[in-house]
Image (cartoon, rainbow, N blue to C red; front, side, top):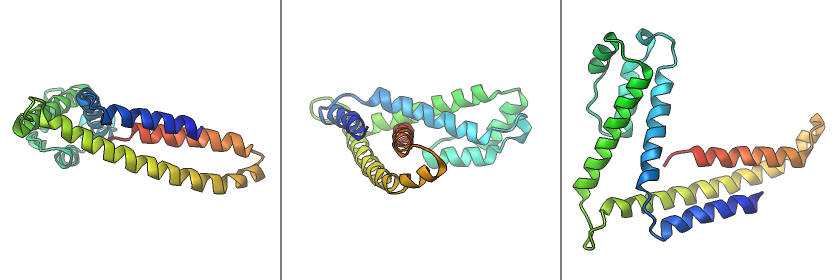
Length: 174
């Protein structure tokens, strides 16, 4: 199992090191993060119960947005749905991302400097999360034998818990 995990991490690192354009993946991560954040603050059934102030603060902590709580309250009064709110923040976040790309400019060969920055950040995050995963797997290995006292197969438990933990780091955002 760890060899399979290692292979997937090394494949991801190879893509980054070989200079693959990761911008589409970064945009998907932006979309996922926006969706998760909006969903976290709009769990209540009725829009009037949503914590719009906390949502705009959370978004402002993620990226420099100009969407205000007052603006959103007005839109909610006009019947804005959670999906429309997600779309508005996705568009706003992607626009900010593209503005930063323009601001950073390009290298001498015309490649946007943002591609280099993306590669650097992704590589750092992948390496840190891989080290954390290895440490967590060591802790799991040390404690999984206790599950046999609950009539559970330690190997099955180690494998399933290890897969779940690896999936979690894959879902985590840069």
